Length: 398
Ligand SMILES: *Cc1c(COP(=O)(O)O)cnc(C)c1O
Image (cartoon, rainbow, N blue to C red; front, top):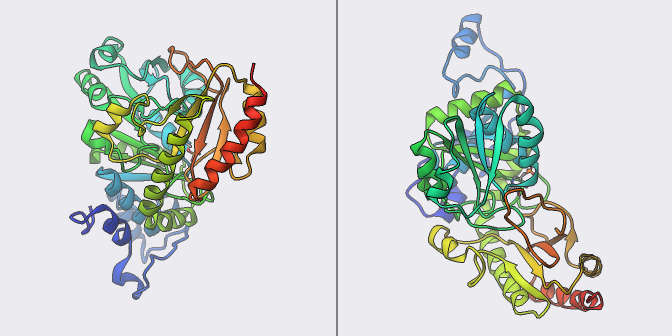
């Protein structure tokens, strides 16, 4: 923890992760690039190499001041002890899975998991002798306890789920997992600082910093934050064994992104709720999957556990509209980019019908579905754009 720990969140974002007097008074930390690290003598180098994992910086792959400042910031934002920065959000998923699972182990993974994380389990971990069972995101403590086997080492949660936005009872799942010595890994990208994972029993928290931390769709980066030094040793040594390295340029951009994180998130949360509220009242819409919206699935749990919402949510249209019609509607939108990822300053939309894999019976919808990310545009313009698109959707009425 830095000296800012006692201050409020926005103050900490402004003052954390800076180099102070070490950089001659410049406001921002230096961008430190490097591979080779030089020593004055063989003895000095030998002494450095035998230091603890967090002090042995004998080579560039172990990171630089730029990495460490970002790691300190993310650990503080999530309320964890330490953080390891990795090259992408997906690497932040795969590295802890590899750190905590070995041949013969069993993993319980939420059915609402981010697609590439499911691919990693089904295509990679399976070949290495790890079995994965998918569970319904809404399971309670007894429900998950019934699925835990003697060899279950990881209970993986993602709340809200990717595309389907189910809110999980993380604390209840963690109690069941810990009773049987399993670790709780959580993808906390949607919740970011609005969900404090370590207060809910999470052992390892995963973030795609690519999203709101970067904030400008120009960085790919991930973080793995942990609840104790022991967990950190495990995650960091796995990352180093795998040759993981994030560019210091990207770390620097993420540090810059964090300075404006809260103003962006608050503005995008407001706009997201405004657009979601408008959509929920439309006759074409069956359901809006936005946990922050009163009446939406998971709202009560969200209200209990989260202090805010990001601006990513799902829309389910009525079954009389077609997936083809939805695609035609999306093609007419002028302010929404058609593309993956989210968390930038620009709005995005992605039709998701037939695109989401679910194997534990969750996420079934009758009508066509899409995912929306609300950026920093004026929400009135975004609503007008969606409204003209709805006319095209209505032409495709069954
Ligand atoms: C985008 C995303 C990731 C992966 O992040 P990348 O940086 O794109 O690899 C992981 N989890 C969730 C929930 C995501 O949305």
